[in-house]
Image (cartoon, rainbow, N blue to C red; front, side, top):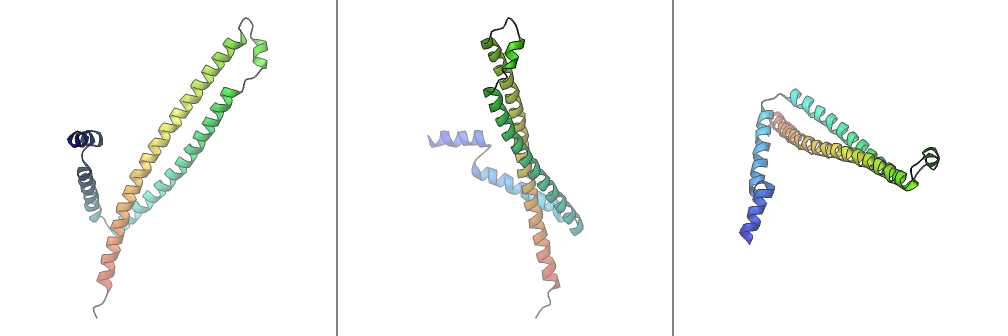
Length: 157
């Protein structure tokens, strides 16, 4: 049974926890090596660029979250509110059939809007995770460089 669970974990999670950690550590090390050859000013410029992108992404997440709440509210209102004047203008159609068509159309529009906003929200969350990962690496590199610069500037006692 334990073997089956381990095999499912390998299939579903692309390897065991140790393998995922090794891959993540390898990605982290390769990124650090790439940054190691850059100058301090380049690292600062890229760091602040990533910070700006991260702030913009957070504003986008807030905006999309607000849109999602609004789309849910509009969908709810559209499904519970009907304009009674419409019934007087349409001849040879029973009000029941008209209500069914209106509810179907409004629910499809609301569902489509909600799905699009949820997809955009998911993409923004993924981008936010990626940006935070890069920011962490840049912060580590900046701290490491500041530490080595401060050690060089210290005078021996």
